[in-house]
Length: 457
Image 1 (cartoon, rainbow, N blue to C red):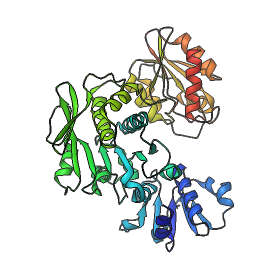
Image 2: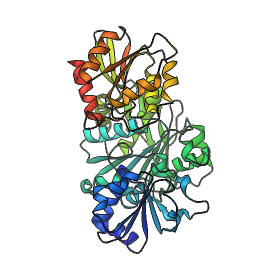
Image 3: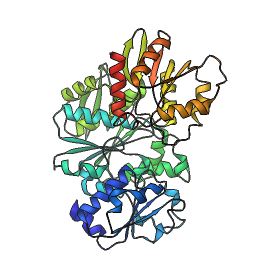
């Protein structure tokens, strides 16, 4: 990796666009490989000017605040973080100047990568693949959108490591190498604020297969007409493995009698039995399971190992995680929900939420989208904690429904005590705080663990 980065960057004027988690890891890797090279960092957040790490680096130049992106087109190479929308680039800018951490990483390690994308389900599918491979004794890492930024996994990569990557459309948009095994679950309308059109978003997703070779595999849902339409318009080099809940294929993944089978090169193999115990309900989850299990078989796991991995996978911790039923109340932990949109989706998914726990560290997020949703949600109890919770309480004022009870709590022991008192038997108490955890906890995982400990206490 060091040789590739050094060769690619040594004679070029390089900018890092976006200095969040991934941008920072890009900066650190470049500094490790090219300690004397001048670097330019662009970010809207003005606090980067006071970042201790950057203040000690005389070879870095900072552009921040309103209009921070002006002049970005003058650079030879721009390493864009996924959270920065591509629409900030001036019209007519040479796209070959734009790269990303994901693109650079795939250029070096693409032959070892199992990449997963889709509008919905990619986090669970990538986690399931990683779980099965880990249980099978196959060396593997989980990187990308759900795991570590790609560069942070480099020290742990050996030639036989399988690298599982959840890849967002933002990470895929400017790649020039696709993963060896690519999975596309679905494409729905989302992130349109980042793209000039829905078509542009679709093309970003399709990049997961665009740069594959004849030695690579593309696993995709044949139940998605939109994916099929893109394949019909493109030249196919790689080996295609469609999967479907209802169709059979000469080459692909399908239900065959009592089993799910993978047919590759004229040879059919049973991957797992249809009636296998799987802890994620719904046909959409079973569809994703077919794709994940087939990727694991291509990566070297056998049918027995895959079946064992499926049965022991419990879903993602802290992501709409069922904690248990206590005193007649079902408790769910969605501590990973640190924005209002994530909270809304959790409530929609569970449907029977009677008490919702909100708040935490106040980052100044705009919560206006959350309040009208809660007004019509049927939730009777809102339990607020932390400074973000206090602000939500004030901003919400009086909800239209007089039956909604708003309660402030000081810590999570009190939160759970209140929840057990006010939540109706047979209903759900949900922690989906729509706020960061850094006021009381190390991270959202720590918050979720404390919540679960108090619920089970």
